[in-house]
Image (cartoon, rainbow over all chains, first blue to last red):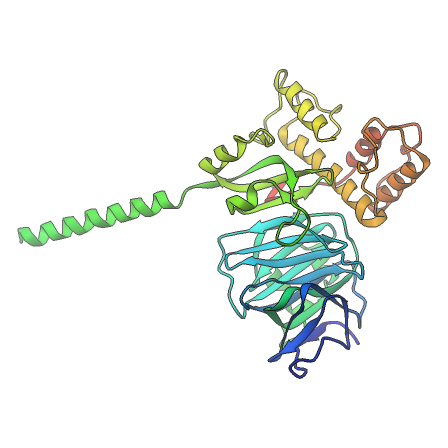
Length: 198
Length: 214
């Protein structure tokens, strides 16, 4: 495969996530061209078909179940380490660091309106993490130096809760890494393939 | 004519009242900085996090010192700030670019840092609060990298700030320092953890927290 990594989750209903993905814990199942957790506990899966640079981005559209309980996963590894952009509630997004599956909430952005079909995106460049909701940065630049490498992935809690669609992940280009102060939407065409932009 | 004028004046007064009500409802917030203890069990319903903030439902960003303390920038109203600092385990920082000054504040700051296993021997009266938090954040990044790249929690195994570096600790600090591109020439088994942290932290670049550069 070659980056960008993308998946629109069009496998048959009930099919477990496989192929380009490695499920690290729990399980994910396809449902109406979306993907969701299929385990009572926490489910982690990372894109294993490509290697990512330390500085990369991951995004997906979100759809609520009875609860949200979903995230995109940055700098993911097989030991359940990395950073999650997690939907805390209908009004709050958060950045979590996961250490061997254990959760630390580093940042919360409250007072938002989180709704079906929105695209959540997380970027990691050096020790700086950023979260975006439909191309608008939420919260502020988050500094954390714990994890420097990994892959892009997804996360869910429980079965039948929130779902993800239109997964997309790619390395950040050198221009983004060195000119990180630029507005992300100006850089969009350089990051993602045409037609798959945020 | 008079009745029309009265209606217009009445509507104007009503509108004025509504605007005032909206203004008071949208209370002014500002970003403030704190050292706050960690709570939580590490599960997603109850993650490790800075104490009090989740329950307040506020926007914040934090840096994990990894030894039970978070350096936090939170967006709060005056009332929320007052509520937060009423907790004895919350250390609040005033205007960032003001010097800490002499005693009793200087001693209080040193005591607060020491109680959180944060080196304090470099803090003097002319140190600004921004410099103080900047150094704390850089210490935190070193501890984070030590955990992330080496899988070791520096203070979780009986070490203290005045512990002299073992060969293993020296190698760990050198590895972490090199991962940040720092000069590790001063990291030897003749110095303490306190000195090793400060040797590396003073070389680290600035970082941002809640929109402020430290």
